[in-house]
Image 1 (cartoon, rainbow, N blue to C red):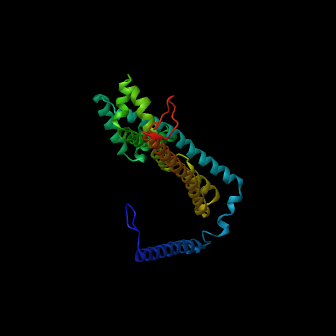
Image 2 (image 1 turned 135 degrees about the vertical axis):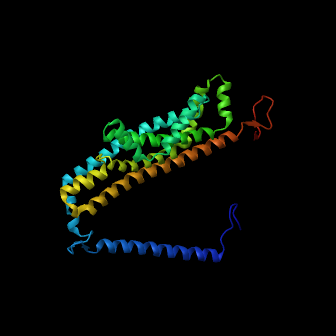
Image 3 (image 1 turned 90 degrees about the vertical axis):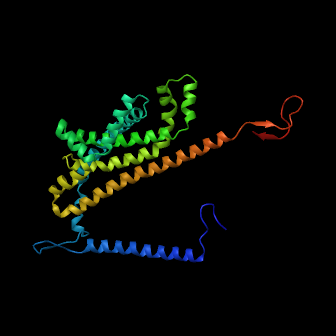
Length: 303
């Protein structure tokens, strides 16, 4: 018995797969055990002083302090404030890049292509530093500008790919009913491309959120800098690992939530396309044996 794409594995292949799986699990458990043992070992400083391990309760007692959670909340809010504004601007810039890149007018398409490739080739941190040093608009807006421009260029390319993937009949139908090229792009092509590329756009926004940590370099108090600089200086360097672990958990929680949302959107978008395809392939039902009055009393056929 075989599948369309591959043969069903035989006894030897299944046995090899089980062995590889067992070895992989043992390897991962070994890495986890090694990490735990390293964290549980006492820390020896350069001068020979021995301090408690990173898992010692004395390094975690600060989390009963309400002020720590208030400070952590301020850092999270600073990160989300930058990410939300940058995400909105990135979507707007992406739409503009998409329309300019797909324009039929050369004096619009060529400069847009040059700018898009330029911004895609520059690291986000360099964009932040360039904006901060040249325009002097402050760390917050420098970070927002860098994130918005870079991710806007990526989103613009994704939308352009979505438009290019549409059948040519979509555009021709819009022009045939009297719509202008711009109206066809806005009312027919762009909505379909946006829905099709929505999972990719959400995934790029997840990247944008993670890249807010680069604002650490330009002295913006996002959650990483706020916790690892302000809170660490307040509570002492002995709590550095504990504070780092909290920041790691915060980023994981936010990014995993957005990744889950991207998967849900991707599944629903795929299900919607399949349902639409089935409806388009089924024709009207007409009677095979119409009676004298014209109403179908017999079976029906699908054309």
